[in-house]
Image (cartoon, rainbow, N blue to C red; front, side, top):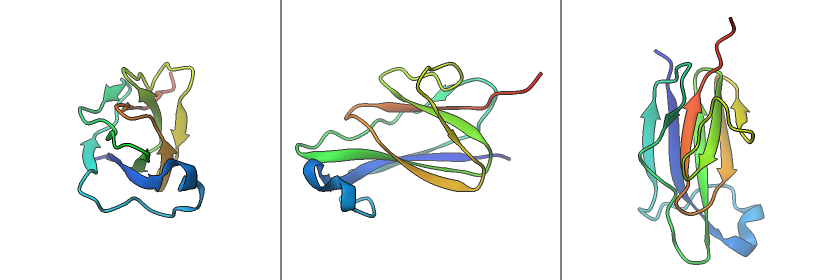
Length: 108
């Protein structure tokens, strides 16, 4: 079964985020597993909101997916979406309160 995991967390002060290699283990992170399909599936979790700390989303997937971020994201049709290839882990800077959506595009 294909699986994509979204983890929202923090990486440090917004003005110093460019050199931080990993999420802070502060207890503010949350994860959700999604089984990707041809339809877009949004997370129920959202990026944390902590003053002066930049929220990130970590996407780990074992199948090719598209991801989108926002207050009501749609991964299959958003104009701003990202392809995440199978077997990879990607990090995305997001806004506090953003959710993620995961979907695949099936070829007819």
